[in-house]
Image (cartoon, rainbow, N blue to C red; front, side):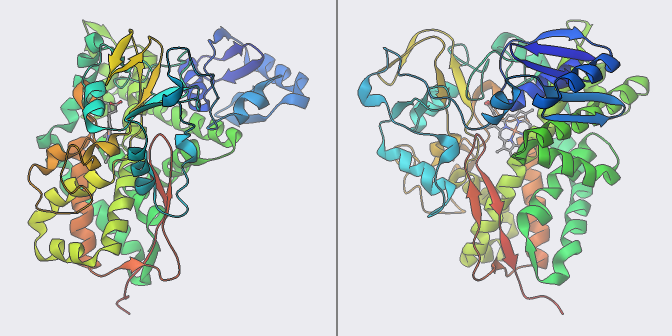
Length: 483
Ligand code: HEM
């Protein structure tokens, strides 16, 4: 493992490897260009001590010291998630400027999806100074156009606020001309046939988790099921021990959810070290699993770089956690609140695939962005090279200009799979969608056969949250316990 020091203007960060360091910086929203140089561990230790009064975190992990030290770091890190305000550029008409911060959407009186639907009362395309300044498209027509024109609306930057990228997330941020081979490596393990082969293992996991709390007659669904299930499925996909579930859950949770930058750093490092360990193992002794595929893949006859390997594994790991957890949570919430719909699935489980699409249509979760690669016009609005556009996929399926009666939930709706963009569109459309659908199907089959009648715990309520992925933080459920 390299020992590295990255100088970022005023911020100095030490990491145990370049790729994990760059990933952490991306996660923390530190987008300055890093000058990366090797630094011996004992020197890193001395630097940290010298800078002690300004240091935020010093931790030891597998014998390597890492941390965020030196002037400016506290300020940089504390901007995490809050976004930067930008002045309106001259090509943005004043009437299209609306002060909108996606990460501060107020869900206290409703839920995140109703709150997003309020966007239909604004101009179809508007510009906000928040989070570095960006456009927001609200209508299905423009969402589809942006997602399906990657040469102009590039995936080179998909996270707000934009900045110089410390790491390229593959295949998510790959250019159209380089994207295919990276995607193909992952896609091979996620075909309908491959996913079908995982199904009974995934079913055992679902049963084991539900059986763990079933007799209690209540659970906090997000903690007790929604987060645990996808981690276990990931471990199965990459053929790693299920006994690692709890620690991986702890680290990924903290890496994504913690409000403490130091906690995020430590947790990410743990995840990275964990993946690094298995990358080395699978290089030494390849198996029949996704990590071995990625580690041993070649593109144009050349093996992937270590950074590319880490990037792809990280996208697969994190791409399938929060997203699946959120959809499981929104599905359970919807069925807890709508007993007639629940009964339809109990009476007729063959409706489940269409029901999943209908639930996905109303509960889209991904609000990633695109980078305008050349001056262009969209819906009569001029956009300049370098602008960012946020694309709330969830609005696609509830736009009444695209779909009739969008707020009616009809498990028999025709063309249900084409009625939403929850898995994206175009070349980056979710490569894990078949696996995700299978996970939700297995959850519904096993949950409804054990717990057909459940409700949100009386006197309590669900908490939904805003972000670049809409989420659900709390869902207290109860049912008549068998005892
Ligand atoms: C319900 C659950 C899921 C939802 C809603 C979802 C949503 C999405 C969306 C919207 C995109 C496109 C992003 C863009 O265009 O910038 C995407 C891409 C991706 N997803 Fe998912 N996802 C889910 C589950 C999964 C799972 C389980 C995995 C992995 C096993 C996964 C792996 C990926 C990967 C690797 C990409 C990048 C594809 C590419 O760039 O070609 N996703 N996902």
